[in-house]
Length: 233
Image (cartoon, rainbow, N blue to C red):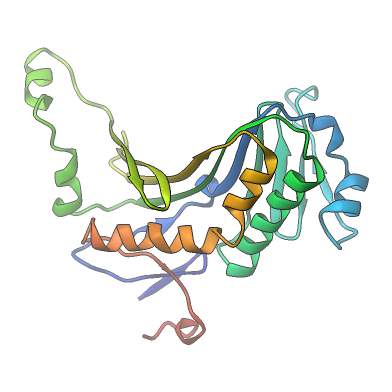
């Protein structure tokens, strides 16, 4: 039993999926006036904290800044509002959700087109069972044509009663397996996006983890519970 990023990794068939926080976020697509997002506005509308960090890209200071507070990162680039967690703790994920909803409700006239909740998991030592999903029929023919496959991605758009899941499985050039989950909804109004995100992020996280376990049976990833803190089950 290993622990990383607030998760329990349980070895099954040689595979351990681990969360990659670079791929965890809530995104709202639209036309955002990123100049509204200033430390004083954030303190007034989004957080009780008085400590809001601001980061400006050194290579291009004209790019919009990003803001750090409450163990999350907030940024907007004109086309997207992005709120990302800095840990997988449930309380942090809930704050990410709360901040995204507060922005939507505080700026109700912002034109929006879609929203999504994203998770990413990585396996650096995939076993044969997991690699089997990337064995597509044209691989041998491509090799005969003088091509070497450097990376393979399988994208699926899945629909259920709970909405759309865009699921991407990638075998990278480094032989890592990357699983990307995007729980998606097309929207027209900010209140529709806020409703979609209301008490949603932990449920989507659980669905992603269950899919890793039940569909890709050699993989397992789940949040640590209080009884797991000592690494026991």
